[in-house]
Image 1 (cartoon, rainbow, N blue to C red):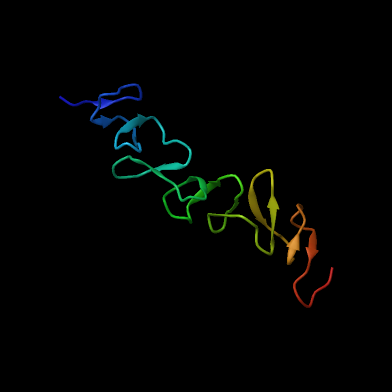
Image 2: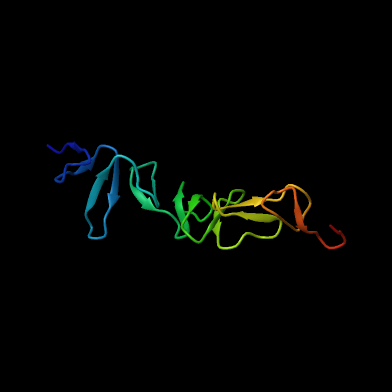
Length: 123
């Protein structure tokens, strides 16, 4: 009879934890879904994240938890973008877009220090 398989088993019909589909139509059993994939709730498959997400909650572009190199996480929208928008600064270390705290058009790495102001305001 078919039995659930662990990570080292090769002749399985069902995985104990998660199933990662492979390109050749085969699959492998994994204890946790690898980076760049997310676990489905119903059938415990590890499916790919959106192309810009390094890690995610689901396939949507609005479910990124971390980003691939060259992209920055905007936490309020859960998206990965190449350039942080106005009113945000780029945190290179965390690879995130951090919102300016003050009413700035742009700010320095200290989110309270404005580097430019909205129209009608001055530094």
